[in-house]
Image (cartoon, rainbow, N blue to C red; front, side, top):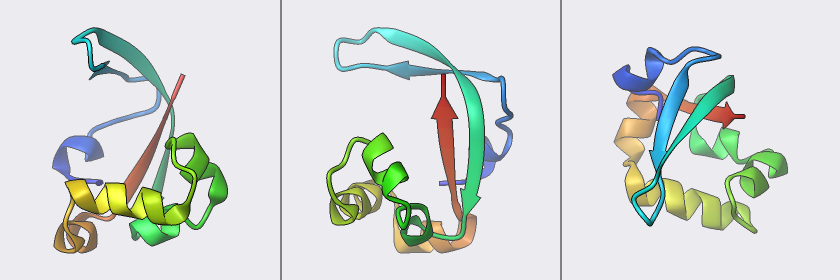
Length: 83
């Protein structure tokens, strides 16, 4: 989701992710790609597999488990590629 928080991100920024064990992992942003919708994002099989899914439907289901269609329409979508 390309909400207000993510609109501030820039290439080379460092963002942190927390894994299931609570370990915080810093990652550098390598690329930001913007899309109108999750369907546009996941029309590329590369984005489906890079996100860890086997099918476009799995990727779409996961996206909509976190975000509503209304949020998608309001904000658009950003793909964050990390190093």
